[in-house]
Length: 134
Image 1 (tube, rainbow, N blue to C red):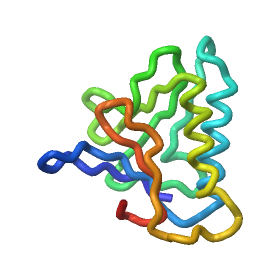
Image 2: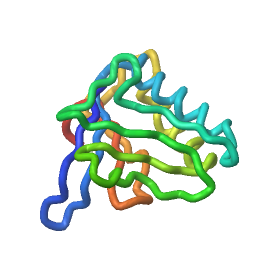
Image 3: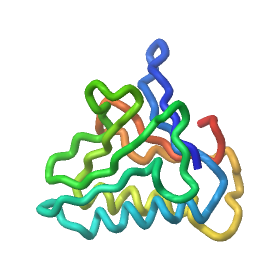
Image 4: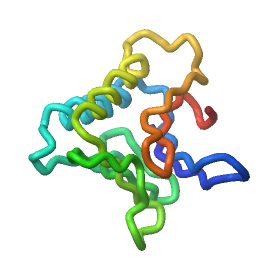
């Protein structure tokens, strides 16, 4: 799967897009979300998404997924180019895991161009898609 940032255009918000057609890689991302949901906000837990097996950041785009009691959504990491953090509480990570389930299913997705907003709570929307479009 790929991780790519799209800057805001006109009235559209910026988007961090995770895309690809591999159910196994979507399953890996879902496992990360489930682990963060189960970790508890008192613990320090996180994962670098672009470093997961099968994932690649376009133009060195990266996403650090973290759990916290404070929900920030997807935010840029200051002074780091295309590096971002997604900071959500445990219930939000549980929701993200549920939204990823259809992409991780062993059966093919009926619409290969299907997409899902994973988080819209921060200044940058996080979307998963079967292709580079949404």
